Image (cartoon, rainbow, N blue to C red; front, top):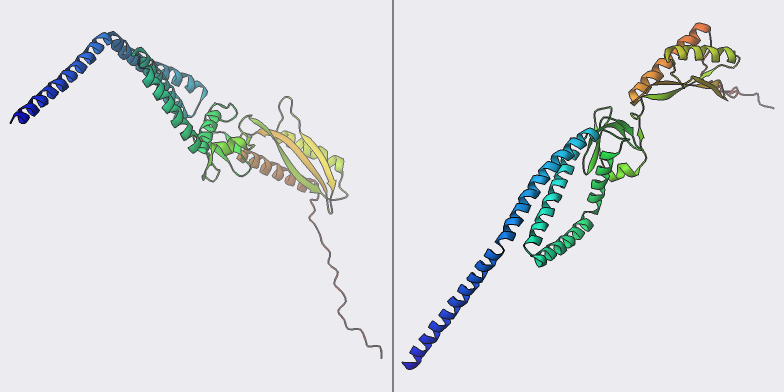
Length: 301
């Protein structure tokens, strides 16, 4: 009986000790909260200000990007990235104000490890992302430009963080990674409004070469008048098997390939009509085949 009573008293004493420890801990936390209350208020104020500043700078960046970048989706993504960076800076400043240096160090270390792991896992994706940002700021390529790569040609329809989309003249879309596009050479037909077009033809041997050159130059210059600093060029290029070939080059308003095809079509029709009018022959290759005599020769008997 005595042992039972003694055990009960020990339990009561232990319970009182636990309650006292818990009470002291809660009082310590409350005192720490009261002491750090100004810091907590300042930290909350810093976080609120970071959200306000993030929104202000986001709107400012959007206004600037609208003047220099036509890609709407890229503008929004860059603005959101700036917004997130400013908010994170405010969060880290708030942790510093609360003297949570250890927590801040742990968060930064964890973020570094996570960033490294993500960077290694998404190396190709990040390459396309940075290439997309570069393409958005490059002055030599814009939405709507007609460009030609080693394999594809079309109008730039969209530049995202991962892909560049080309709309081909047949209205088919080509989607290629940004990194592949930016690493390969490409031709942008829309950088300048003027371009030079070449047309090739041949005339028969025996034609008056000087007269042909004069007639073609006059006809092309009348149809495609050059501007300042431009000229129509005519060159005989070779003595071919059945013709004397020449090349004529002239300038046109040229920002996409369809304009080049239209100009070549017009020039070929003009040259053909001109040669028909003046009796100038455009020869075509002739091949003469000699067949052996198949008649049976008399036997020498």
